[in-house]
Amino acid sequence: MRLAQAAADHFSPLFSSGVGIKTIQDIPLMDLLCRQLAIAPEYVAQRIQTIFLNHRAVDRTEQVIVPADAVLALSAAMPGLVGATFRKGGVLSAFREDISHHADAPSKGGMQETVITLKLFNLVAEELGPHLLSQGVWVDGGALSPIVSRIAAAPSLPIETCQWNGRELSPDRLSDLEFPGGWIALSIVWVPPLPHA
Image 1 (cartoon, rainbow, N blue to C red):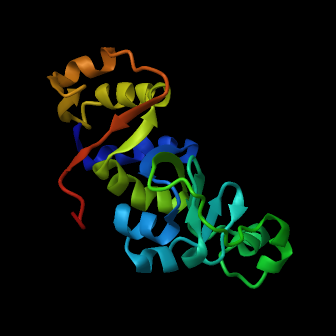
Image 2 (cartoon, rainbow, N blue to C red; image 1 turned 90 degrees about the vertical axis):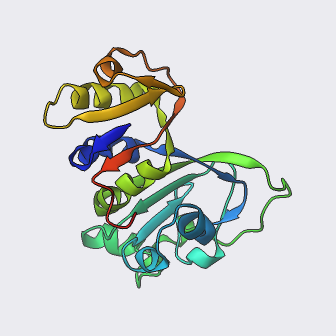
């Protein structure tokens, strides 16, 4: 879709439930974030304060290998004691040792493709969500359908153009589509372009 930037907030629920990112099995976490997803290393170091990989808190991003079919969650600083405890490299990280991620060796699966689930929360979702949508992600069709319907019904958020399965589709027909369940590919061209694009 080619869509007004003002519609970006409508897609936030996709990120809290998780979007699919096609990548290589056993990719280093920093390669995934900075090289593949083009997130600035400074942003990872300073803004992303809480990272979970397969439900385990990450402290040292440079030691983490992302396995096949992983679930990766990213968040800005969370408030209170919980936030302080789960902050990467925080002074309270010793209190969660049993649920912390520890460095592990990559599997022997080779350079095989995989799809991981990426979840974004709070300010990280607001700031990175539009960027990732412009790169293209995999989303659950059932979750996307009501979002598209709301946007299509809002005259202040015009969909300029759209394609479905590689063919041009009139934007007024988009809300009539039956989105399949499971992963479907979604990419958005924002108008005006994102500042860093």
